[in-house]
Image (cartoon, rainbow, N blue to C red; front, side):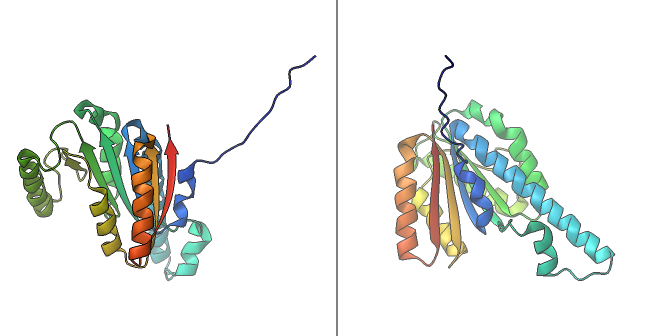
Length: 214
């Protein structure tokens, strides 16, 4: 007389294996930034723990060796992250502004590069967008701060040129294996997957694409 219950799963999130990659490219559209923010916070916590372990070892007079680090962080390989958050509305920046600022402040070694894009302000190639970008680049190079966000989080007012993003990472990390993690609508999935294939075939950098659509 009891109902028949069927259970299918559990399924892990695509981004949960990010620790296997030395370099990760994190892309979130709108609220799809949520799992990426979790990854960034996890990275920051691991970086801080490793720094504390190194400091403790130095105080104790022990050499800081690779074997010493592997005892606690053998499954954590990530050493560089690029985060791109794309949203249509300028007001959406308030969703994650606090936590992104926190990540930027706690990433003392500058291992995480943060970008936020507002696509409803100016179209890519618009002269006003180009002028803002130029002023931002000058100020960021001089002071390490973004003039719009007031933090290290770089603000942009157009859609990202994803091919340029992939190319820059390939130039910065030749022969590396890069984990690409995307969370958002399916509209961007095919483009990011195809770019991962193209750059894996045409450069020494290999891109592994993972996605979570909603």
